[in-house]
Amino acid sequence: MRLLLIEDDPQLGKAIYQGLKQEYTADWFKSAEEGKAVIAASAYDIIVLDINLPGMSGLEWLQSLRQQKVTIPVLLLTARDAPSQRVAGLDAGADDYLVKPFDFDELLARIRALLRRKGSYQEKILQYKNIAMDLDGKTVSKDEELVSLSAREFEILRLLLENAGRCLSREQIEQKIYNWDDEFGSNTVEVHISAIRRKLGKELIKTIRGIGYIVEREA
Image 1 (spheres, rainbow, N blue to C red):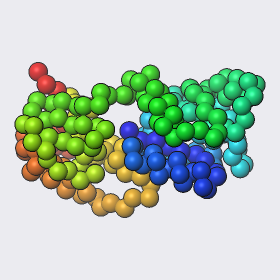
Image 2 (image 1 turned 60 degrees about the vertical axis):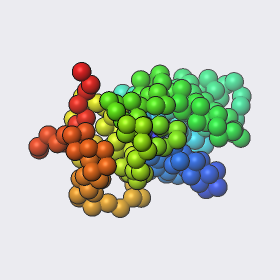
Image 3 (image 1 turned 45 degrees about the vertical axis):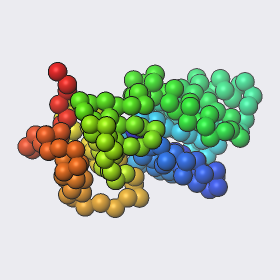
């Protein structure tokens, strides 16, 4: 899952960003204008959006997204708790609303709820044949024996298992697992997939030449 955080407060933004990176692939920007620039180039599953931003407000950007038929779930953050503010946010197209200060665990719970509604939420254990992936514990086992994967290998395998039966291109995989700040080479995904095959079996991930990679759906 890839999240976009728009928050101009440097301390709060950094704290939220660091927390989100423990659970998801996340990007953090400090203005709606920056959000507009990256949203067209990246595939996001959730937007966490502060209302009070410099320049274009969070509400103005949200309204423009909905006018453009962008349906990505949006969780609004605000310091204002007046009912009129909540109504304005929801009417602008927000899917949920969280008032500052908030508990980070509640933010994560609300994100999970939005993913469930979107149909992107998976069980905590992904089971595929003799391979089990514990999403909370960040572990993978084959035939009940733990297999050590790097963080990137784990995310690529998770993405392919969640999309079993669907071929994903290298570009689609890169968009989901890399942040804007990450540096990676043109063959980085191939290197990680080779490592996954070496550890879990070369038959697990198939290459569709000229298209991408696929974990075939179980019969």
